[in-house]
Image 1 (cartoon, rainbow, N blue to C red):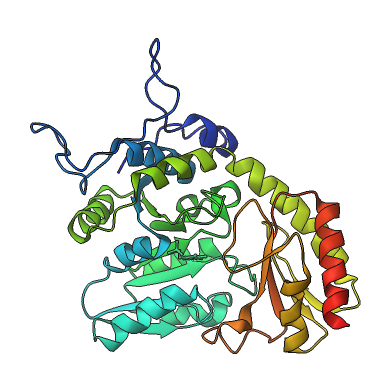
Image 2: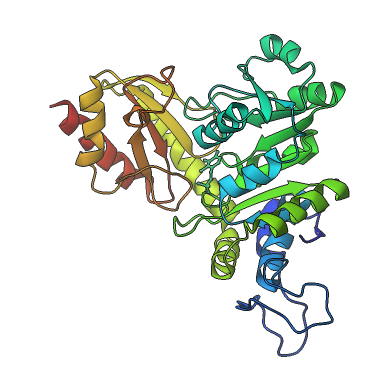
Length: 359
Ligand SMILES: *Cc1c(COP(=O)(O)O)cnc(C)c1O
């Protein structure tokens, strides 16, 4: 856990400047990778499950970006688990049926164990979902949604959660603090799979939870210390190195996604484009069979056929290839994570793959 500081700077600057060692002659500019399971007695940390100077630098930077106090974990799901632990036994969680499938699986498991009640409502429709918040202990929000990329009215739903005494949690993995700062919009907790945009290079798993309330921050750290869901030190260092370029990566990915969304809308093999107008995630429905849609991934040379998102490299997949993906997602829907390559190269590769898969 580490405090944020540079709140008045812009996110692009914070990503570069925050989470560095103190400036002193011959002091290193970058944080050291501290590989230690234990520390000399007499201090505040004592043991490697309770803290690490490398994590702390990363947490300082993410906390400053989101405007709160960050606690990091060994994966996005470990952060989700820590946040769901804030729900009292017998409590009620409200989430969307199109929330991240891992989060829904964790909720379903807790529901089966009798630990929580889960109410699934379409949170992208605030008029319909607001009444369902009555009696809730925690509301789980994601915007844009995955993989349909629908925008959720975060200020309205966070305010509604507040009114009924529920914690509002925003999984900000897709939008990143470059595009959305949920704590400023009224959320109590922000969660990230840092595996995705924050680290940005598809080379590690990490998660983080950010809050403003000191008591919540303490609970999040206590959970990690007891459950041992700590990040690796080298991962934290790599994630912080990746974070330095977050604004550049998001801006370039977004610019590329905007161009591709426009061209795909006019493409004869495409029946529908889902792009919320910001961010670097894009979904397309093909005027094709599921098999032909699946084949697109085997005809690209540049686009990586893989799950996950938020890396410097562009990737795509047909979401329904996963048996657990919601039946509400069309069979021919491809989800694209647009990277930072040259957009003309991306377009050339994608359009030839669409033709080749159809033929
Ligand atoms: C990937 C992802 C997660 C889970 O994170 P891991 O790092 O894979 O454990 C949670 N939420 C969203 C939106 C994600 O994309």
